[in-house]
Amino acid sequence: MTNEPPIAIEINCETGVETVRPLTEQEILQREADIARSEAERAAKEAAEATEAAERLALAT
Image 1 (cartoon, helix red, strand yellow):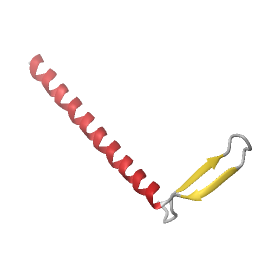
Image 2: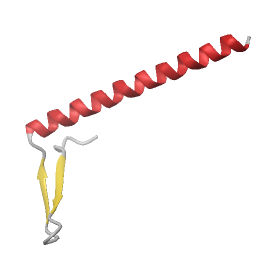
Image 3: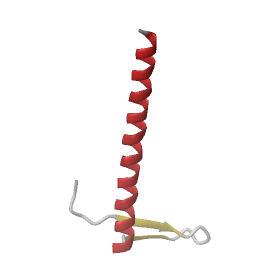
Image 4: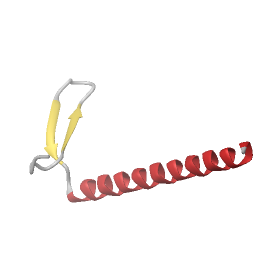
């Protein structure tokens, strides 16, 4: 991982002009919140799947 700040790439669909800029502090905070939420959702899904698998195994024996 580099120490470079995350960037946003914006493309104007009418002109095709590409603009590259660093993310604002608010965008960085939102990005971090989105990543944390996604990781929490993934962990919850994996836990639910593990519970379901354990319940199926218990019923099968």
